[in-house]
Image (tube, rainbow, N blue to C red; front, side, top):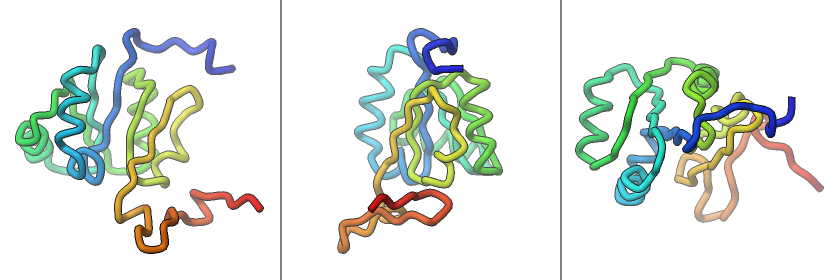
Length: 131
């Protein structure tokens, strides 16, 4: 099935990771979520829902739903179930499970990018070098 035949929510739903994404650029994500025309779903690898919601509220993030996961693959399941078509995360390990048709943005931070060496940090599982 090609991505043009998939049914998604209109306007599109935005999915955001909390730690390493929203926490690293809260002003940007506050402005983006408040101007986003569709649903905003925060999908986070956390155990404490109350703390996650508190952290979002402290950063003035608009959200419609917060979903906690305990496995990388589970984020992909949530994106599919919630009809999220645009997703931002900082861990390439997460991104490899996301279904085709979901637009993905990799948020750069010190955990996935060597600023001194100016190169992405990837494993054999998440990166493919082309020569």
